[in-house]
Image (cartoon, rainbow, N blue to C red):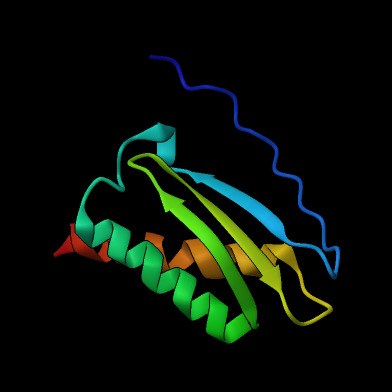
Length: 100
């Protein structure tokens, strides 16, 4: 199966608005189909919520992607920092698990 073109992500820092985020796993592989990987996602969401003063209104974790509805309580903020805080810990945990 040929790789699909990489999507260009657009993000907007609009104080006073909620943000709906969707993340897909690499090549939409079902990497979130185990309790372990879903726990990593939930832990990352909780850590980002505390560190960046986010209200987490809802999330749904599916085997190959997740949806997240957040409301940043503090302005100014950068969506790139929020995305990094959400995605990097999960990636790091997955890599560490594979190295074990």
